[in-house]
Structure formats: structure tokens, C-alpha cells
Length: 459
Image 1 (cartoon, helix red, strand yellow):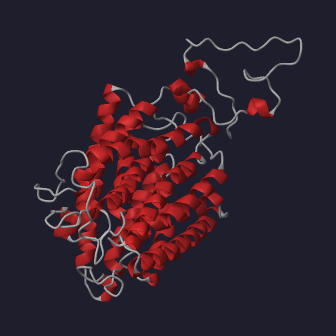
Image 2 (image 1 turned 135 degrees about the vertical axis):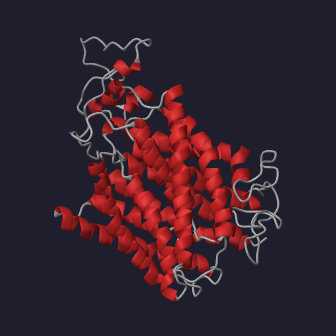
């Protein structure tokens, strides 16, 4: 065991774990005040649910040796073959297999959390929890096997997935397995749940942009574990991925702000935060295969294409609440395809073919296109079926009254902000002035959906 590589991998796993609460803040700031807690809960619950699913069956399905032509891993007793021992394919030095399993768990956690932004402000909590558990098994685990399970990575005789080992498409840290996968699922789920009440005539403005900026900063910070950690070693390739992540994100922010200036006349804070995430998404599949100039080009492409994709939802009348499709599906596609243009063996000698600009022809670009298309189609179709199944059985969308009053109260019996206390009002927890009766509490048997929410959101 190499203790330095092990420490690096565990630290990166912790960084990627931080991305999920970071994503929660990023999304929570963009919804209305009456649904801020619901948005936080939809993200954080992914860590709870997927953590257990991964231990019981998820890791086996994603990385176990398969006998199904690279389609799915085998299932053993819970955690039987990954609780001890070393990771076979981590390079010259080895790290514990359990460290690798925990690192990959954090990828499995944040992928369904990304989907939540597309169906914000209209999704019931318990059906969402069921969806996350089933989607992790039916969609994420097979796709992760296709993309991440290299032959021999968990054991010398382990058979991996077809995209990595037969097609030889390149995805260093999850452009297809995480971002395109989540983006295609977000598109399907937005269709299943339909548009929010009043949209697009009534536009829901972000209620707390500082939350969104904080979330973007946490995502950027955690993304270094996401990308550089995928080298599985504290080496030069990890440093290259770290540097590429930085310059691509910087380029994407500037490009997004320029596009905003040209289209609307104002560079916005929300645009800067969104541009950062778009750049991070696009560089993810390429960060271990391209040089700095290639990373900058990928960041610029994402910063130009993704904001234009955001505008398409208004033309298509698709209520992708927080632009998950435009940033993650489109951004992931941009990065995945451009690997076939900018990949070079000077950065990573292990690539099968040079990129288009380095004399490799169209071969690698074609492989990247096939991988992107198959992952997007599989995720979209299975998510669509799963979404309609949940909607038809236990219900998926909140009722109209609950949506109007706010999901924080209808789903969790809480509100994110107590404005009555701040204005000197009398609430159940405050003592009224002398001589005035205590306010009467609502009877416990009353339906919580009938209790009004303070109108403290932006119009």
C-alpha cells in the first residue's frame, strides 16, 4: 500500500462529498423562499440513500466482474469482495479497494442530486427518495460500469464495461457517467412532472443569490477532488487535471459573462456562478487527456454554448427549473466530444488514439460521440419509464395547493425563514405583551397543507 496515494484518495473522496451540500446551496438559492428547505433536503437525502444502496448492491453492479458482455457487474454478498484488499489497477503503487469504493460512492451520490434541479418546487419528498434509490441501481450503476470499470481495476481477472474496454471512449472523471447521465435523466423527469403552476408566464426569481454563489464556490473547491482524484494517485497526472480544471473554469466564467453582456446588456452574478459550473462540467471528461490550451478552449466552448442552450427551454416550453439539461447534458456533451479533438499522448500516454488536432483523425471523436449518445439515450428512456411508474403508483408531483403554498410547509412542516420574529410579530414561541392572550396553535389533526406560508419570497 502507498500511504501517500491512499491519503490523497481519501481526501479527494471527502472533497467530492462536500460537493453535494455545495450543490444543495447552489440550487437552494435559485428557488423561491417557500421551497428552500425542500431543495436542500432533496440533495442531502441522496447522500443518505445512495450511501446504503452503494454498500449493499451499487458498488458490485458498477465495478464487479461481469459476464454480460460489459453491460453490468456481478452481485455478491454485500461488500464481500471490496471490504478488504488492494485496488489492482491503481498503478505502480496500490491503494485500498475500500478507499476506491468510497471515492466512487461520492460520484454515485451527486449524480442523482444533480437531477433535482430540473424538477425543483414541484416534487414530493418520499417519491423522490424512492426514485433516487431505484435510479441509482437501474441507471447509474450500469452506466458507471460501462464507463469507469476498466478491465482488472478491482481484481486482476475482473471484466469491465464495454465503453471503457471495447469502444475505448475516454472519460477521465465522469462527463458521460455523471453529467450527461444526470442531464438526460433531468430532461425525462421534467417531462414526467410537467411545468410548474403558472410557468412560463410567472417567472420564479432566485430568492438568495449569495446562497448560489456559496454553492458554486463549494462545488469548484470539491471539483478538484472530483477531477484530480480520478488519477487515483498523487502524481503528475493529478496535477495536470488540477490545472486543467482551474483554467477551463476561469475561461468558461469569462465566456458566459461576455455572452450575457451581448445578449442582455448585463453580466450577472447568477451568470458567473452558472458559467463556473458549466466549465467544471465540460472539463471533467477531458481533464486528464488535454493540455492547458485544450482546457481553455473547452472552457470557452462551454461558456458560449451552455447559456445559449439555457435560452432554448423558453422556446421549447420545457420547465427545466434550474437549467440542469443546458448545463449538465449540453456541457457534458461539449466536453466529451472535445476530448476527441484535443486529447494528446503528451499529457496521457495511455490514450488509445490521438485527438483530431494531434493527427489522430476522426477515430476518437467518433468513439466519444457513440459513448455520449448511448449513455444519454439509455438514461433518458429508463428514467422516463421509472418516472411514469412512480407517478402512476405512489404519485410524484405535489398538489396544486401545496405547490402554491410552498413545499417546505407541505412536505416538511417547516419554513426556511421566520419573518414574523424579525418584525416583532407574535409567534407560538413568543410571549405576547401583558394582558393579551396566547395565540392559539393549530390543532395537530389539521392538514399541514392548509396552513399558509408567509409571503417572504420575491415576486
